[in-house]
Image 1: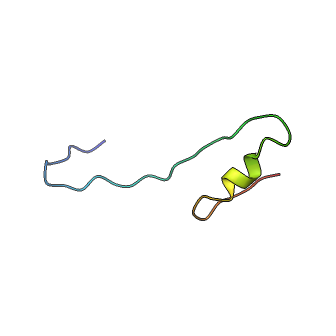
Image 2: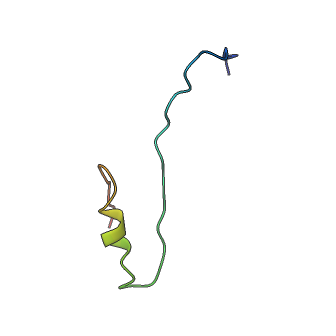
Length: 41
């Protein structure tokens, strides 16, 4: 891991989220509100 200077910009890392719940709770509807979602069914 390199040493960063105070003026260096931090890299933006992607967010990985897992949504778990009962059937019919609205998980897919919630996931579809994200930017560029990847849904695995």
